[in-house]
Image (cartoon, rainbow, N blue to C red):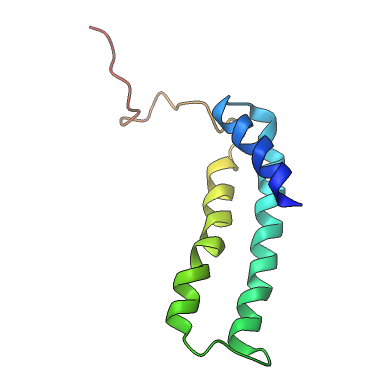
Length: 94
């Protein structure tokens, strides 16, 4: 289910398509909620993980990625560079 979305999202991000903003926010919200249930099951479920450090190291990224994606795509124009930003990575011609 997620693989076709990944392909479209990667293409849209690489080509800087702004219409991908809302689908990424929706997808990231679903992924965060789904993985929260997974973490609760891994901590308090019938068969909790015997080593929480390894469990968190292995799956923690998948819990952080949706938060990072939502933060990145929350603003209206996620691909627009803010002119007030002092660190834009672009060198101005003199």
